[in-house]
Image (spheres, each protein chain N blue to C red):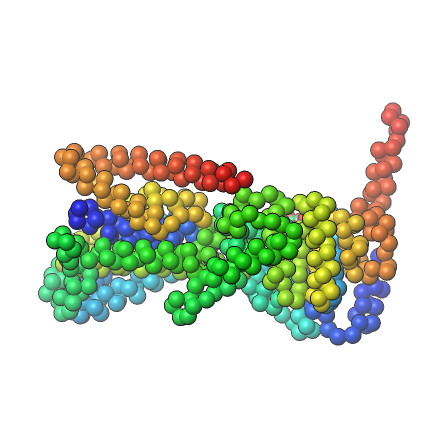
Length: 294
Length: 277
Ligand SMILES: Nc1ncnc2c1ncn2[C@@H]1O[C@H](COP(=O)(O)OP(=O)(O)OP(=O)(O)O)[C@@H](O)[C@H]1O
Ligand SMILES: [Mg+2]
């Protein structure tokens, strides 16, 4: 059980943030590669530049928020689909991840994080294992649950949450009644980037070495988890708890296939089938909910 | 339209005190399309300014300039006599100008009470625990709608499930609730039945009596004439005149709104016996 919860936790952190962004009406294709960028930044700043790991983690946060801001700013400024804008950042970051890692280390990975100053406190916060009823659990699960709770509260109980639904539902209409739609969008991209930073830092500290291609390809899985959790692709509807459950289902499927001794190749078939099923049910449920109240 | 210019000059000199909102030579271009040009009028406290004109005349564009949605390409906007620029609808709202847009500006998938307070959510709590005061929002929404004669079964119902008229009532109730000084209504009665339209007209009169400046757009002279104090007529983005109530009878207004000569021509054309000409 600890194992599939473990898969679900880092995915879940991203899925919840991506769900907020999708409710707000946007996609972030750079979210996956950004977990790599932040993990590599932690590694390079700590190992290659010889800084305390907390300094490295802080540097990665600043970088992530800057990238998130840039994504949001470009999307709101140009009015272009976020799909295209973040595809651009995705490719650029992928190139930078490889190029800069090679430049700093001469290889395609950063290693040796376990020996940098501050590692043990960082490990305690980001990568320790706690035992509940004799079962070992990764601390990332706590972060995931915490983030899901906070995201739910923000979505349903705060002004910002109201603005997220409104911006995703109809951006022009919400701006006309005074919703700061641009700021909301930028904040959502920065939230996604912040989640990528958390996952990147957890990955770097947990593995103590980071591959230059970390996170690439994960961005679609975040979106799939959010959709399985009930987010509409068109924006304006969804929930954080749903996305967390989507990540859970994903983790269970992945581990289930391993336990059943099936070929891992089947995993993507199931993923695709689940996505289709989810999209169809989302539509049906939505129609039913609207029709039932007429 | 010599009457129009005369009326404009008189209005500038006879009334005392600066109007709530004043437009001076307002123009708006969309690329090469001139949607508005040289529009001047004033919105005074305790008066209803009706804006009339054909489809595409620029009525919605004009009120969007007042509401801060569009920045005017030319001309000046004055609030209490001093020039203002609304960079965003928020600025206009903060100045006490609330608008019912023609497309209503509501989010179909969101609950009625969430829509009602969208952009102006009441909050409780402190610091990081400051939150959307949902209880107050639900209560106020129910109360304001009941006052309009709309009995909402469930304020949690998504707006998309309401009828067109109910949706319009929610948008109007919202503007009435938030419009502290100026209330702008873009064809608010278009989807309403006789009873609800009457309620809206009464609301307009009430707002006027409370000292608000009201801008009222409608195609219906029977709605415009009884409540209007001023009538601004638009044609293809230009002003065809800005009349005080005493200067126009309802029949004249009807005729002008319907395009005057064009209507007479149309009537003649339709009445002509078949086979003739
Ligand atoms: N955002 C925009 N971009 C380009 N052109 C626009 C825009 N908004 C309005 N227009 C043009 O400006 C002109 C006036 O439009 P507007 O919506 O103000 O008319 P209206 O008087 O409100 O008409 P109706 O009675 O049909 O509501 C039209 O020709 C329209 O095509
Ligand atoms: Mg219009």
